Structures are given as C-alpha cells and as structure tokens.
Image (cartoon, rainbow, N blue to C red; front, side, top):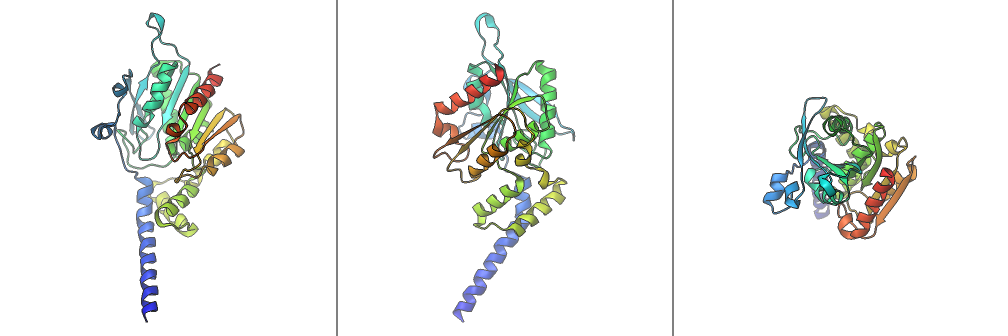
Length: 306
C-alpha cells in the first residue's frame, strides 16, 4: 500500500513538472529576463562607457517591424594630432538576458588598439523595444539594419567583424552566412541549433532530455512568435561562411557544452581557429584565460585588418 502511494506521488510530481515545463517553457524561451545598464549600475557594476572613461555616441536603429534598438558607438582612442586611428569595426553581440553593457570590457580593449566598437541591445533586451526573442530568426535581419545605419553614420566600417557571446555568437554566425559585408566572426560559446539548446536547458532545469517535451515547447513557441525554430541553426550557417571564424569555448561550460564549438569548428567551411580554455565556464572565458584571451582576439583581428 505504502509503495503504491509513493509511486502515485512520484508520478503526480513528474506529471506536474512536465505540465509546468510545457506551459512555462515557451514563455521562458521567448521572453528572457531583461537587464539594463541602469539596473546594472544600481547594483554597483560598470554599465556605461563613461564608467570606463570611454567616449561614446548614442546609436539608434529601426528594425523592419518598427522596433527601436538602442546602443553606443565607441570610437578608437585619439593618437598624435588628435586624429583617431581606425583599424576596423567590431559589433559586439550580447547573450540572452544580457545587454550591451556586457561588451564594455571588449570595447575598452579595442579602444586602446584602434578599433571602433558598436554595442547594441537586441530586441527584447536592455533598452531596446520588443518583448519576443527569436535567437537569430529575426535578429539577423536586425543586425543587417544595424550595419546599414552604421555605414550611414560613420562611413567606412571595414573591415567589419562580429563578436558574440552565447546567443550573440549564434546570431553572429547566422548573420555572417547571409551578409557579405562581414569579414570575420568571433563566436564564444555558441549553441549549434535552437532545438539542441532547448534540450540542454531541459536537462539543466529538470534533469531530463525529452524529445517530446522539446517538440511541444518549440511548436508552442513557433505558433506564439510566428517564427521557425528549425531555421535557427548556427551549424547550418557555418557551412556557408567563407570568412575567418574564431571559435572560443570553456571546457566546463554548464549551459552550452564545449563540444558544440568543436562541432561548429569541424563543419565551418572557411578559415577557422578554435580556442578552448580549460576550466572556463559560460561567459567567464576571458577571466580564466586572462591575457591569452586578449592576445588571441587581437591577433585574429590583426589578420583581418592587415
């Protein structure tokens, strides 16, 4: 009798967890938690360019569906005579639930080395409009609009490189597959496709990898947001990219296994490098690798700008 009660209790608990995952999964997927520079500053973090004594200009872009994206343009440091050396432009692409402030350490590094840095909040993130995130399905078109506006604002942006972390890396790869103005990509901790990312998230939250649950969550999300999860695939994108790609990943990443970057590296069609950092987790690769991380980034950029 007691065993029957225990079995029934466990079964009800599992059913409850699965029901919650089915109902909440699409909401969590499409509506990430929003952080803003203002919120980060209130928590004591450096969140604006002036927190690092960096010059900046506001940057606003209208998307195809009339959302406003907000960001900053950070020019390189002035050299002799007050002129600014321009070795190229890097657009930084933040991760899910993050905002443009995530790119400030990179902007600080690039500022000192002659590169213009552009930091923009994706739709449904930071200070930008929108409340639905599609992990590249619409964001890659937003990014092309960003490049259009950047060319109007500053003229020459070449050579143009995308650097993204996590979701930002996935969007960078998807965009580079369709945008010829991009001359290089730095992709840190990208997932291989949205379907696999959802499976990994399932395991992280409920310790279960269920293809059925994955399918239900994605189908509900697709209907709600009117997009195709099948098309969100950095793995398909890298096969079409002919420009150099630097893949970066930490071996102890609990969110996106580093094998994802190894697989992307194997399938990339163009010139490619893979930088795996032992002991690094998700988004802390720079902290773990230190100056080696900076040197790898700058060497990669120098090859493109040469």
